[in-house]
Image (tube, rainbow, N blue to C red; front, side, top):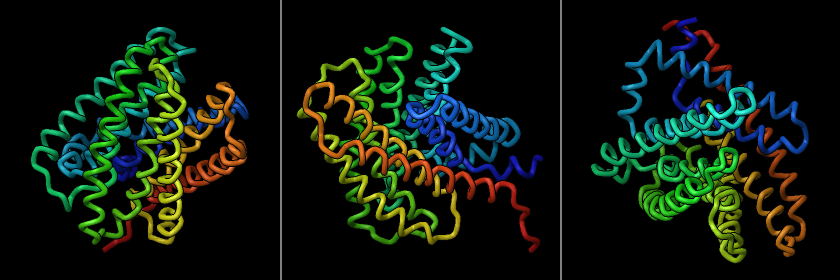
Length: 308
């Protein structure tokens, strides 16, 4: 058992986050499916907690790596989403769990900024940097569940500002340093996540809604989705790497952003033609990516290392 836990990688938190988000995406189809996704997310969380408890030195070592440190932000993001799952069970106590997750996210942002941004090395910048500075938007998406729209509004604007800054930095890196190790190539698929998350956060936050602004950021996020999807399809032929986590939450949150945009524009009396088809296609793609990535992760975690 200990050998299995030892093989649980930090990016597995992205799978935890992805399942928690997928449950919300599929909730309109079935509460049972949402519950199943929540259970799978909790299972991933359990493995990660065991890794943290049993091998803290390995986690500490991983956090010295900018890619691992940035991907670790998916852990508190997943906790924020899971807090909404347990609210019907533990009631108001879930809100403290939610605030704890936000605090953990802030701590990781401060650590990452001090350790890697203050000592910036452009070749070591990857799309995973988006997670650190836009991940707080999950608080915007989940804020209504705890009647904390003011907190959600603040988190949305912080996340949006973080996206703007990281979009400039990350895009500059990819345009000027084109050599990417195969094991890190899938990370570019994260491009679709932060602005889609901001779209969802904007719709859910307490901020006054401006339809033109929403349409602009959704339009940009849709273009980034197409870019990331093309990249993802090409990278599926790569051997398994923990960076496969980039195939999970980014595509789920993009489908959620489309679904929320469709609902908002319809309610505003300005429905976008064909959005129902787009949402369905994105939902199917997100579900398939999630199941495939989970299978590959579990295959890697449960596999017996070959003798040297």
